[in-house]
Amino acid sequence: MKTYQHIFFDLDHTLWDYDRNVTESLSELYHHYELLNMGIPTFQQFFDSFHHVNYQLWDDYNVGKIDKTNLRKTRFPRIFNHAGGQADAIPIEFEEDFMHRTSSKPHVFPYSKEILTYLKGKYQLHVITNGFNESQAKKMNSSGLTEFFDLVVTSETTGHKKPDARIFHFTVEALKTSHQECLMIGDNPNSDILGAINAGIDQVYFNPEGKQIDLNPTYTISHLKELESFL
Image (cartoon, rainbow, N blue to C red; front, side, top):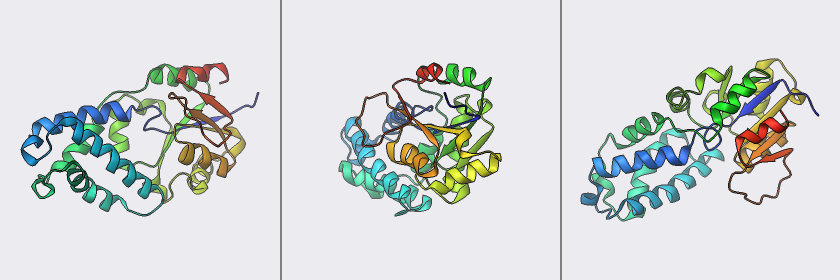
């Protein structure tokens, strides 16, 4: 069994339960701003439009087609248009309210803190994320994850996004270690798994939904507690 010294975690969808936290925030926003009166008849329509638009925007961000400012500027106007609502009626504070509410949510995946406690005694733990500095820091604080990690590396800080190998190289160099002593754990086959492959780092594909992918990760798990079987 290979000996690792440093474990890299993705944050959203791997430790921090993005879907649950976002769903709570969107429900609060739908009712607080009375979006029914802005032409969006149901929360489900708002929710479905959010996911359709938001994932496309993040795909564009990850390949450099859009920057942080324009992602946040255009997100809810596009969502309102997709849902059949009145985009020109969106309150100016809507995006910031969404970011604040969502980043303040505490929900993490099952076994997150248990496995981090287990690993913390054996390895140095770090985060590599394509998220933005302020929101990722707030998510980690709100969910009680900050204390487990020594280094948090974001695409905003490095100027490189997973799967670009340079964000992994940056982290390895910052830690003064070797790629062979590192292991990347994440849910996204492209950004996390392919990115780590590109950088020559072993990978754990966190796959709770049993998705089929074309890649061949070093390890695959369906829940985080499975890490105990080989780490």
